[in-house]
Length: 453
Image (tube, rainbow, N blue to C red):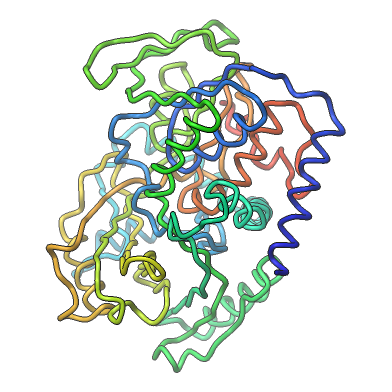
């Protein structure tokens, strides 16, 4: 009940803040590029305000993470991934005789986009920049989580089982830490508890680990949710969905004029006459940017997942994230169907979906470990590889383009797109409509102008 009250207060404040500012522009025509979790939540808030919303996405948006990522709403992963030492990852790739936990493809050093991204990345690795990134991530994550329960209730008409939405506790388990690293993790947990009450240290002996803590978790089937919302937004909000791949963008010095796209029949068509264009396209945002002369500082960190259906009695005792393996075991179907998702890794392998060969075997090994060798049935399993679009400073790009006055970004959330989706969409709606920014957030933290896009 407490969490519901916290949400209702936050939601009411957000709505009243809007009412105190200027009247929203009704019937504004908005085109959203991307129909993953960020595109869907953006369409929800914009259409609810009265905008005429069209959403376009590829016929099979497989490169995104919505369909097959961890499907969890939680404060993890935190802190900023800019604390990751890319130099060390490259060294490990060169020297490991066994399979590295984070693979780096050395030929990327010849790739112009990677070199552009990594220069921005290292520029944002100083202690002050990382501190600012962490604060921005913490604010957006906390704000979004506070909205999530009511958002799901509104979307499902108080029937969250439709999308397998449920609550539990995530067990974060670390192995192989030094005493210094254990102390650093203790300080991290203490800091996280300021934003997510219920984060607490637990005895690592239970897991035969170096360090462990628990944190509240919301888990749901985001693939099912997105497909459900396409129908609901179309029927209830008048949102128009198109399947197609953007091929070209026509623009003036300050305005996006039109888009050309190839539909499912490979016919070229034109979209024009929109007041606002919103890019929620994940790693595809890089290509959209190129079409209008903008270098978008996103790099796809390649992740993998495996879904397997098991008998209820074989579902793991709890959802968990395991380090240093960077593996998340999610009990997605705990209430409704027995589906377990094992997902992980963060390979720097280019903005493609070519699998690193040994990753599938590693996930199968992990899945068997947690559901049992006998319970695992490959015929009931499905495999996926996709890209988490990581911004160079690990803070998402949310807001108006610094070059085009009718272009907006809502992308670059890396591994946190699901968790941060609701808060990001509400911030985006406030920026597009000219309403007051939610008081929990600082809009400048996410402004795309920091990268001149």
